[in-house]
Amino acid sequence: MKIKYVVAASALFAVFFVVSCAIRAPRAEDPLDKGPLAKILVYVGDVPLGSSGADPVGLTIDEGGIAYLSAQGRDANFKPIAINPSWTATSSEILSIEPKTGPIVALKGLRKGTVEIVVESSGVKRTLNLITVR
Image 1 (tube, rainbow, N blue to C red):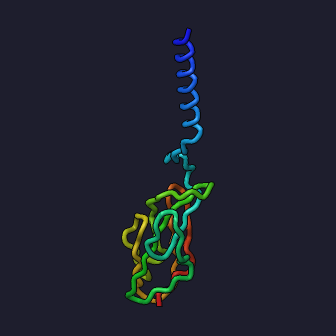
Image 2 (cartoon, rainbow, N blue to C red):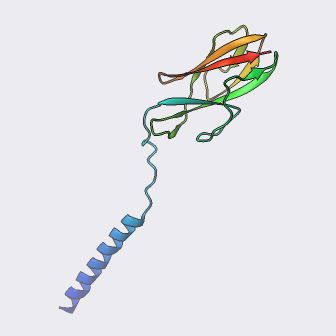
Image 3 (cartoon, rainbow, N blue to C red):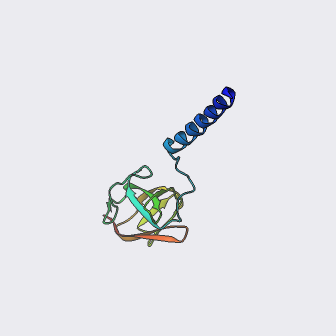
C-alpha cells in the first residue's frame, strides 16, 4: 500500500512539474509567423532590418556623387521582413542604380535633373519622389 502512495505521489509530482514548466517556458518566435509583404520602407544608408533611418524623399545628390539606399519590408502587423527588391529610376540618363536588385543599392548622379525611383518586391511598389541631381 505504501508503494502505491509513493508511485501515485511521484506521478502527481511529475505531472505538476511538466505542466508548470510548460506554462513558464517562453514561446519561441515562429519565423514563419509573418504575413505577406504589405509595405516597403526605404532609408538612406545601410539600415539594419527592423530599424529605421532617414527618409530618402527629396534626397539631393551631386553630379558624380553617390548615395546609398536600403530597403526592408513590413507585413500587415508591421513585423520586419527581409526583401530583395528591384530598383528602377525614371531616367537612367540622370541617375544610375547599382545593383538593380538587392536590399542595398548605390545611386550615382550622372547629370543634373530630377527623377523618381520605383522599388518593387513581391508585387508591392514604393515610389520615391523627387530625387535630385545637382
